[in-house]
Image 1 (cartoon, rainbow, N blue to C red):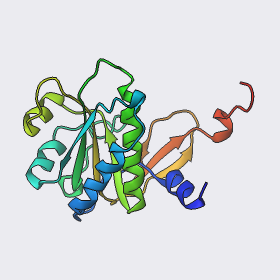
Image 2: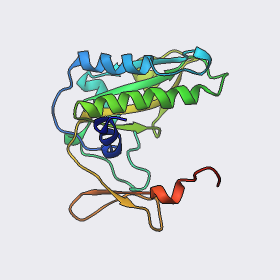
Image 3: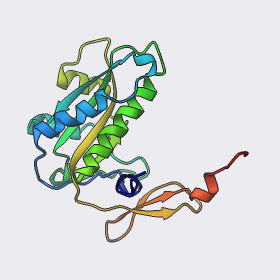
Image 4: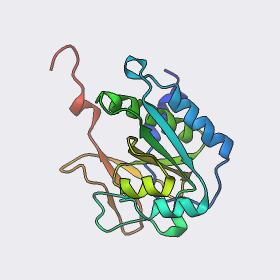
Amino acid sequence: MSETVYNLIVNRRSIRRFQKKNIDSGFLKKLVNVARLAPSVANLQPLEFIIVNDKELCLKIFEIIGWAGYLKDWTPSTEEKPDAFIIILVKATTNTLYMRDVGLASENIIITAENEGIGSCILLNFKEDMIKEILKIPDGIKVDSVIALGYKAEHPIVEDKKDSVEYWIDRNQVLHVPKRRLEDILHINKF
């Protein structure tokens, strides 16, 4: 594996605070293209995507998202809101394996964004009915997830997990993210 790709993946963190800097709309389309080309279970391709980069629509979406489950009542300021969102939609949820497609497509988006210095956060805590209304999404289409995108205004720190997986913000407003150590989760040839 290329050390460049490895380091990109190892150093990527979820970003919840963004700079006021526009992302090129052509690049947002490239992000959807890499999502479209991700592996798909049985090649069913149940996903569709909405790019949201209109400032008014971004603000409406921003306001109906829960930003950090472990940080009670915390949300980024409107000055730190993302420049864009990619909304991941599912056309047919009868095959529950679509969730694998979502994971693979999301990973392609966030790694490609990271490679360009654009931070991202995959969000699952939102008001689906309001997103559907705001973006005029028809019945029968599920809003699976929202990916916030923007140039980074923070640089979270990874720490070895000790007692808890809960992330936290220190007094300097730096986000700390506990991760399980490799030696605690790796098994070779047997459990």
